[in-house]
Length: 360
Ligand SMILES: [Zn+2]
Ligand SMILES: [Zn+2]
Image (cartoon, rainbow, N blue to C red; front, side, top):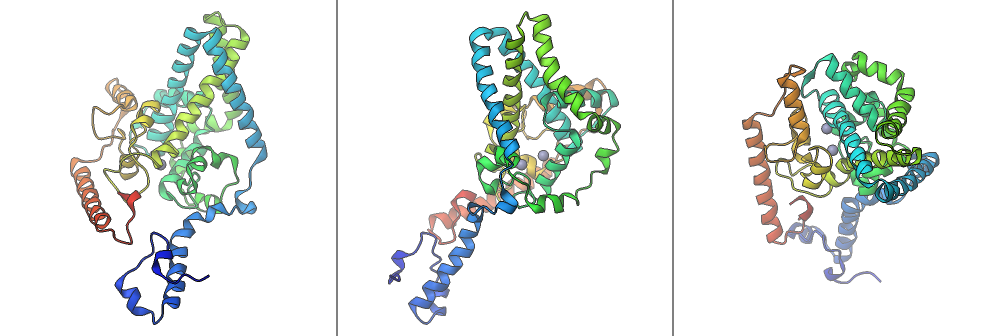
């Protein structure tokens, strides 16, 4: 039965004075406004209808990830049960060193060029990045530059509008959207591929990956910590999956939960929890606003070991040209964001039909 009164309409039904005047009868008004509602809101739900040509599951990846997680949970259980102190210390240290390669290397150095590093430091960071096992540097940087340039669109490899699970790990389990490939070709990667360290890692990635990701974390505890092969091997999965999930939380949690002090019009947020588990990568609203800033955060009290490491390297002459957003740039952004928040609050308080509380 067709609705006879506006009470039947959805919560966000745009009942403006104009629309009441424009339509001659209620039925026409309802049909047009419902159509408008559908286009405006239901379009965001288009990914619910999975097109198998574009979004099909990559079964080998899915099976691999399920098996790795089974190993991971079993590994964690065994580490805690039979090798609690040495195992945990080793897993955390190995994971943190690998994390340095991802945050201060792949992310802040190679992707955003927020500072310059000497050859020895680049080799060290490249080694750390290989320990993390997150694909080679070239692929990592291309995906992340794509994420910044086409954030929250189909060309974003882990587009968070497709849901938190997709942004976290789902993007690695499904086929890439065609836009990721098409627009991926527009990303300038010349500076990255001209780096001999990146070229070397890309060329020998498989043996390097096996050596740094599997051999070393199994051999070291056996040689120096009296661990058995099974203890060391299963402990290795504790470091691997743990560090992967920490990195993925930046794409999922830091795009969904947190505050937006610098730019309310984008989805990334500042999230303390993510900062604690990623050496300071959680201030994602700041980072997407000022991607060239090596600190990824404005304040010294923010948990940001990555920043301290870069500053230490600069002190001993291994890094230089550390880039930061100027205080004026930060102030302007803060003021703009505050203005928009005030406007949104006004709309919200007046129960405006076009309110978007999530942009608050
Ligand atoms: Zn992001
Ligand atoms: Zn970034």
